[in-house]
Structures are given as C-alpha cells and as structure tokens.
Image (cartoon, rainbow, N blue to C red; front, top):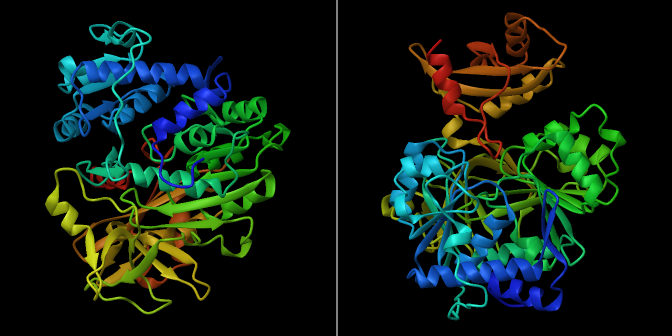
Length: 504
C-alpha cells in the first residue's frame, strides 16, 4: 500500500494487474479474483458515465450482501460519484426520506429490495444486481466489455460516501465521509496485521461503516456471509482459515453461546474486531479465553470526530473501558453547559480529528447542534455518549446521553442498572429505558431476556435487582421478553421498548 493518499479504486486496479487471479471476494461457492472484480467495476463506471453521472453525484445501493454490491460500490467511487449505502431492512418511509435527501442518479437494488424501492419512489433510477420483476437488470444495463470510463482524478477531500444514521432515535441523517477518511481508516488497520494473506470473514451488512475496504486495499481476501447465523459463521471460519473478522457484540454473544463452540478449529485467527454497540466486559473475557487470536474493540462515531481502541489482549485489566484515544484524535469531556469536567468525572464526549465529517447532508442546523468549540475556537463533534477517563487515560463509557433517565432530579444511567441485572445467572440479555412518571418525571424500566432453561419470577427478579442499587436507581417495573429488538448492526431499539411499555 502507498504511504500517502491513493484512491481505493486505483488500489484495486493495481492489485488486478499484480495478482489477477487472487481471490478478492468469496461469497457462497463463488470466488471472484481481483481482475474479474476490477473488470465489473470498470464496466459499471463506464455505464454510469454513459448515463451522465458526474463527480459529486450520488449513487445509492440498497441490496443484500453480494460480490456485485462490492463492484457497484467500487465502480461508482471510481468516477467520483458519492455512494449512499442504504439498509435493505428499512421500511418505506425512512427509505423515501433517504432517497429524497440524497437524490441519487442511480439506485442499485436486488430482487429482495426492488419492490420496496419502487414503492419509495426510486422509479427509473433502479438497476437490479440480480434479475428482479419490472426493473432493469445489471446485465442489460452494463456497457459492453472493453469500454473504459474517462479517467477521473479523485481528490482526497471529495465525498466518498453518505452513511445514514440508523434512525433509532428519529429521522436518519446523512453523514458525509471523504476519500481521505476512508484512506485513514485503511491505513490505521494496517497496524493490525492486514496484508495480502489476510482472510477476513464479514457477517455484518455491507451498508455498515466497517466492511470491505481494509482487506481489499491490503490485497487480501474477503469472505462474505450474506445472512449471519452463529454455527454457520464458525463453519466458514474453519473452512476458509479466517485470520480477521469484524463483528458487533450481539454476534460475539451468539457465537460464544454455540454449545459445541470448542470443536471448531479457529487457530488461524490473528485478530478479531468489535464495534457498533456496548461490549460487556464479561463477554470480552470469554472471547479472550476461548477464541484464539487477539481482540480489539473500537469506539467511535460515524461522524468521524474521534475514536478509541482497546487492545483487549494487551490490557485485560481494562475490559470495562473502550481503550485510549487513537493517534491524531483529541477527546474532551464536557458538562451540560459546555464546560470541560475534571479528570475522573463523567461528561459528554466531544472529539476532533483530521477525518471529521464536514457536516450532515443538507442539514445545516443539525450540523451546528453537533459541534462544540473550545476556548481557542477549535471545532469538535459531540458524540452523544457520556464517558469518564481513568488515571491511565482509558475511556469508560457510562451511557448514551439521550438514554440517561432523570428521575426526581437524579441522573440514572441505564448501563449501571443493566450491569447489575447481568450479574443474575438467569439473565441472558437486558435493556433499561426511561419511561414517563407522574411522580418522578421519568423512571427506569427493565426488559430482560431469560436464559434457556431458567424461569425466574419477574417480581422476584425485580426485587433482586432493586436490592442491589441505590434508592434513587430502583426499577419501577421489569418485563421478560423473548428477545430485545435490535437493528441490523446489533443496537437495541430502546424507543421501541418505551413504546411497548406505554402500550402495556
């Protein structure tokens, strides 16, 4: 890899020339070499230019995991287009909002999303990566083989993609990330052993922020798992001798719960990465104990303000933290008045780095709300997370600011109550939310998933928990549920839980 900025699409072209037959992407029984991937991306680039796509135009992709998805992404950024990867699990109204906001010149879909996108108003912009009723297919849309696109000199500051927030707390916001931002992400991961012999097993959706690019930039092989299941994941890891993986905490949880986990040969793993949601210390300990290779947890914001990394296998005494700030990242903690708090006190995390987003797409007011400026006028981005630094400079996440419950004037952090409930042997998963209270303004309520084979009484479990917390922290109610509602990246949909409670 080059020592200075180089567009991702150009890196793939180099790899196609240097090792054309090496597998770039494996999906199911099909392995696609770098030359084949590059040829398809080139035809997509030429087709977009033929249709009038210019640098800065948006190309959306809303489809399941596939090699064609990767080629469409690479083909679009090669001509300077900005890719908007949209969640195929979206419902029509948020999807329509994202399309209205991004105004894509082309929308790549598949048979699983074509109907949804047509109902959301994508219309003539649709191109299906596989045959879908009533939509042009990729094969019929593509320019003939051998037709190259006009070269585009990609600049580092140009937008690379628009990542839309999950929408768990309101309307999705488009977070614009530059080519430089992606380059920095790739460069940072080189330190974790990415190289030509990397085999990265990915079971997270391709619209997420942590997928293909580090492995492809390093010339390694990406093994795609279109639909995650824990046993199938372990079988793929063993079959392909996976060296790297990126998972969200709930995936780690389900993998470690496979009864015969120990019979799978995972000795090829060098390192495992986790991001996207809170990762409990107990689960980290279990992964370190039973799964070969290192473990690194990343905390950061899609907006790019700042990030931390916990190299868990080097700091087993810091598993309650998310590590130290990454190189080039500056993090501060502020109170509700925007004043920095002393070391050891909790405050909202604000951060700055060279790869901060310029702003939310078409949302000037929301961009201003996300900013904080220090006394020297330097710009930071608010994370919405509450945290505190320990004496060694490790950052401990306390909770999401929006999830904090203010009950009778006291601040209650749901994560504290969740940690207590997880100590009960019958509790498999838990989420605590704040709900309206006439007496206290807000009050905490727990939703608990019980381990298979256990059947504790909810009233007794509530009493057990309340005996272990402070008087002002006591839960008003506890509901047992089969599972917690989560989005595709494993984040608990707490707004949905509040609605369930209010609906009785």
